[in-house]
Amino acid sequence: EAGVAQSPRYKIIEKRQSVAFWCNPISGHATLYWYQQILGQGPKLLIQFQNNGVVDDSQLPKDRFSAERLKGVDSTLKIQPAKLEDSAVYLCASSLVGGGIATNEKLFFGSGTQLSVL
Amino acid sequence: RKEVEQDPGPFNVPEGATVAFNCTYSNSASQSFFWYRQDCRKEPKLLMSVYSSGNEDGRFTAQLNRASQYISLLIRDSKLSDSATYLCVVNYYNNNDMRFGAGTRLTVKP
Image 1 (cartoon, chains in turn blue, yellow):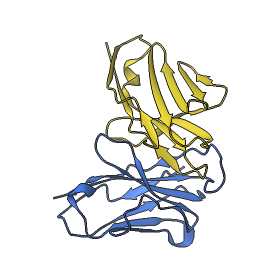
Image 2 (spheres, chains in turn cyan, yellow):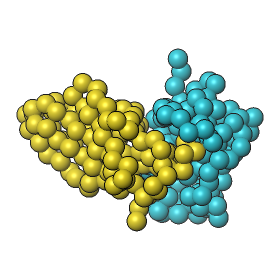
Image 3 (tube, one colour):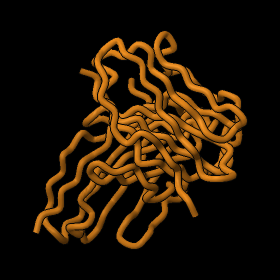
Image 4 (spheres, helix red, strand yellow):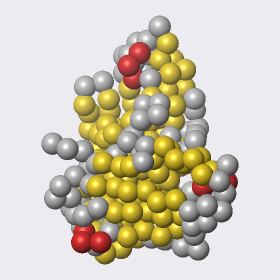
């Protein structure tokens, strides 16, 4: 079974530039998450989708970050403009159900995109 | 208070030792809890769910204390391969909005 696919694997940009990350979840998974993991810290939830609707984006810095999940399958996360403090690994995860249903759903993570902002 | 808080570590233990990690969460209404493992430069992977009555999976035991809003993970007979960062995860608003702690790093030495 194919896992969660993310691209690119690495990205280096200068501050004030824009960047986009792409995620394709496991087929049939309704819920998709984007996390930001700064070195030495745990993953921070940025946004949670169920199908193509947003369940939680309370920790997404909306002045510069945006995300969409058109058609309820793959998703893109964009940063515009990037700041030095955005340097982190951006992890995408998916789960089978989730979003309004309290279940013990396992998260499956992609390998992440490592972003360096210079 | 942080949503999910863990022992900062690092924990450096010899092979065969028993080690315990703690985690507290701030939303008393949270209903489900997990431990994930993350190897260096890899993605997190589910280690085990945490059930109300406590649960065991081989050398790993997870406990939940709802009154104190506290979760623990006990590893017995540590192996070199247990070296990793252990992340406490809470289904914070019971909406499958999985919130992670900062992680506790474990190094098991020969």
